[in-house]
Image (cartoon, rainbow, N blue to C red; front, side, top):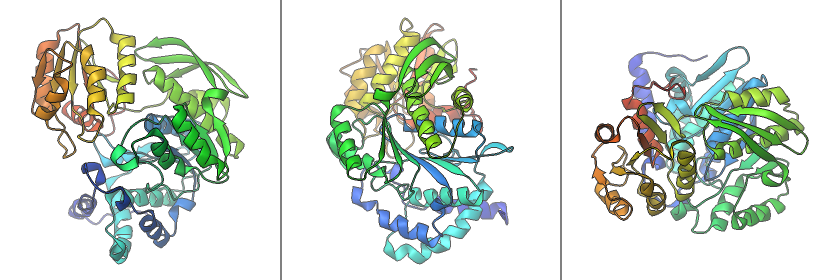
Length: 457
């Protein structure tokens, strides 16, 4: 199906993606620059590939990627040919598009497949460009939909990039639309109140699609209900219909019990760490039960096996031991609070060296206030992205919360400094940005195929 002319052609064609406007690498831009009508025109010109498969659509501020990964694994275990589209990536953009086909295992998109798809999409983009420049996320989203169509995917699990209303993914008509916990993030784009942010994210809800809603702050929940009432939708409010009990926590994962409105699971295992991941699992289970009611049937055992196989790197991932090296992509106040609780669950009595780097448009003070007092030493640094806050500027934010504060110009130098100060009984925690996490994984020579493997070195 895919033709590759030469390696030079591969590299040159992939560079086309890098030439596009990439809002993931820009801190300031007008929110209305995201034009859903432009995306609608592009998909229409490509034959509306998003209509060739069923879908699950997930928005939210926290846990949406983890939830997508769980649903994807459960659908795999149920025997469906399934696609997964997420963002951002840690090492390679190939991570964003994954497929699993019956009897053929799971894989990420190959570069040569991306090239073939770009060669189909590029002439369309050039023809439509008078309507405005297309962005990297728009084009890559179109590539993912086209790839899923050509590969015969039956159902795709798709993570919203940002917000919901204007997101390039918001032209599907999903069987299920889910909203994970909403907190303050992208406030310059989505609004300065939880109600405003919730209103943007709730625009993924569609008529005839089940709406699965996780635990929300009252202000956010009220706004989501208001949007849903005007559609209307089949409503599943997870906290009122699902409950759980932790049975065992360890550094390999969590065992827990779940009671749903129609079924119970007595002994589930999730290899992701932290009670918040169990809460994400409840949302994923609710999505799968809603899918079953829509005709995409998942057995009790498929849900159990799927959860036990979830692989989602960069989220409280323990990479090394003696001393422990942990990476986590927490980047706002709410996710930092969750990270703090998980850290204290496993490492409360061990001295912490915190490596912190954060993007300039994030909740910097909230992250610093939550995490820095936990550490005996804080090392501030920056990822190699234009979005990252300068280390000296970050140092000024941290200074109120740390008496032992160091600066490192790069992630590599930060790791070297941390290892010199931590001791064998201590913990190094790298956090504040998934860009930072990706750089650590690359420094430790994790290949793109291996980044999700939870094996501790």
